[in-house]
Image 1 (tube, rainbow, N blue to C red):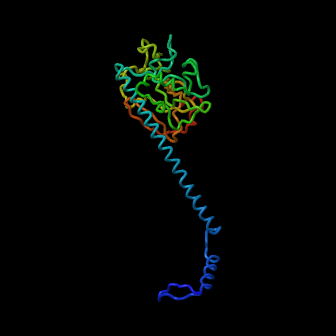
Image 2: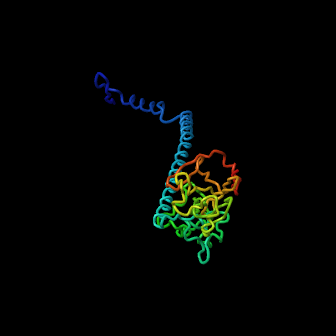
Image 3: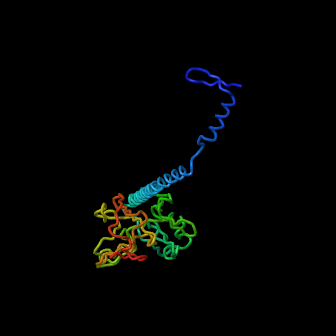
Length: 284
């Protein structure tokens, strides 16, 4: 039998047996897949590409978390501003402790406890309502009516948990914002003792007009998980000018501050975080 085959000059007759034989030879001799060496080369190339891609993805994630953290601070800042607008220019307080029948300061920006070991501290509000993982504490804050999203109070890069439940707060407020005059050289005052302010060398800020340089006066801080506990960031004005709490290290080379004029800045670490004494955090 013969089969027809196309050539450049037209149709020719080819024996059917020869055509079948050519087909069988092609099946045996033509390559049908990758060789082992080719596969190894492809795998090596994929590994190199993955090694190049993973750091880029990691860097993108860090930058996205930083932007989100900055946005959270800005929203909290606006909440503080709206509180002052609605309360005769009085500043929302950093002072966390209650008095008389108040378990916490009802004028605190955000009462409650934010440390994980232990996850509660009764003087700062009874547990479990004011423990580190309870949104109830956020809802008692004076700026909650203006910032009612619980996620805003927690940095997206703050992975701390208690029994697999995330903590609810990552930020703290400058203790001199209607809070505590820590180690003022000539006096001592807190939110509860305005009559003692006259004896201070420095100003315990109670009203917007007290903050003479709002663009240079920080209000909110992204605080490190190793030192955060109550709602204020202790600023020590003793002669050695120490700071007892520690800015967050979760964003790599920078930490985040919100200022009294409502702008947010990323400040680069000038020295390693190890310069702060672990746990207690005195900076010399």
